[in-house]
Length: 153
Image (cartoon, rainbow, N blue to C red; front, top):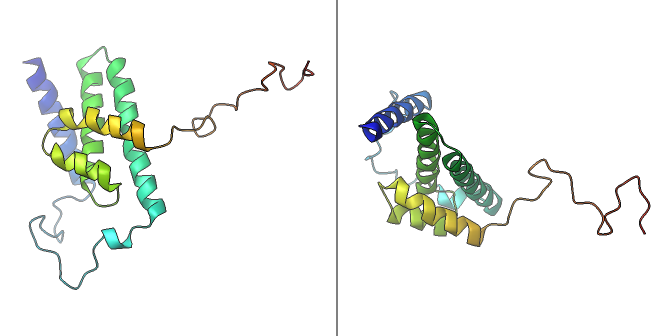
């Protein structure tokens, strides 16, 4: 029963997000509509920098989901982790992320709970660890242990 409530809540959140992002709005092409043969493919227009940024965003979302899941004490927190994983899985299915990550997302199509650990493993093996500066942490001090106001020995 609890799982059904979490799934129902998550489905409602995803539906609201889809509606807020313009999914299903009038004038939006049908997802089953074939692309125009004269339109350039999206993959051809994505720069390596944009692909790397999109991949990093997906990997960061997966890391955040794992942190939320580890600290979850309530069904709402577990649902938040599930939503983050589902969002990362969905973004990985779109063009613009690394082809390896995209392939994992396609392999686990429709099963974000199975996709998330596989995608997290891929991220750990294929993306650089975030730097301390990017995480808002001060850089490590000198190897001598002396602080900025203390002379080194």
